[in-house]
Amino acid sequence: MRLMPETADRIRRRDFIALVGSTIAWTVPASAQTMPVIGYLGSETPQRYGSRLTAFRKGLAEIGYAEGRNVTIEFRWAEGQYSRLPALAADLATRKVNLIVAAGGAEVALAAKSATTTIPIVFEMGGDPIALGVVGSMSRPGGNLTGVSSQSVEVSRKRLEFMHEVRPSTNVFGVAINPTSPTSDMQLKNLRTAAESLGLELIVMKTSAEQEFDGMFAAVREARAGGLVFSSDPYFAYRSELLALLAARHSVPAMTQSRDFPLAGGLMSYGGDFSQSHRHTGMYAGRILRGEKPSDLPVQRVTKVELFINLMAAKALGISFPSSLLSSADEVIE
Image 1 (cartoon, one colour):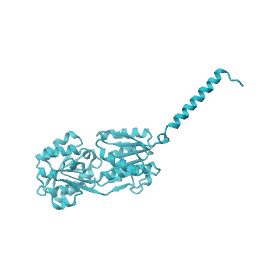
Image 2 (cartoon, rainbow, N blue to C red):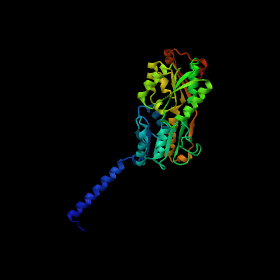
Image 3 (tube, rainbow, N blue to C red):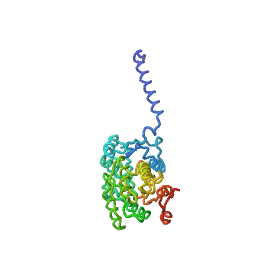
Image 4 (cartoon, rainbow, N blue to C red):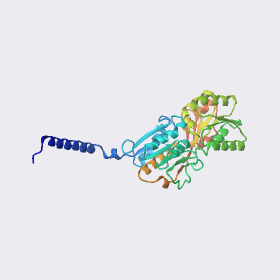
């Protein structure tokens, strides 16, 4: 049977379109079509999370995932404005990512939890996830959340004890509290209990804004306090360089939770090992992507607590460390 010219043209166009479509489908890697997406919710900026992100990606790699190769990571950053976290978490939820990582504190975890009850969530925080209402059980968290917690919040009182050991002739110390933190009341209670047992007086400095930091250090210096102890809070931890600069400028001995503080020139730090907690967060994210359920993964506790001491800062402040404290330090910066 002979086809009419216009009919033959339609067949040729149809065959050409089918050929092009099959060629495109063949040239797109299968991994690109099925690559899972992690939604990563952070309270600060990528720069401030730099060392944490390195640890997180290391944990992912240990389970076999590498960003851009077999997993995509979609980031949302609050840039220090924690009130933005709920909206950013909701945005990730509407995009139906395979998993949400809520790393960097209770504020981030609670925002993610409020955004979805179906998308798996892996959190990382320094506080007690049960007391904060994030999960109901450590061994069987249930629901769509699991994660990693460290002991940074629990050891806040220990920082005051260390500072008093360094400045034994002083009985007045400043403590910095972020009143917007879900753990602030508990930490302040623990610090006051420690102060009472040591016979110390506390000057409580409540702050949640960078522009208030300079005045806080000035007030501690004018009160002739022995030093300034920071409670465990992500807002303080991610501003270690600024805090170290102000401590040196005002000649105030200070101690925070994060090793980033003495590494930046501050005197001391004592807190959970964030590199391990973020690495384990990456490993849990990878395990969930491989098919495990968050409800079946117990909340991990990173029990390692590290003490960092900066002897150069001590010399500038005219401070001598007891040998017992130096010998127990995880790292002494000379």
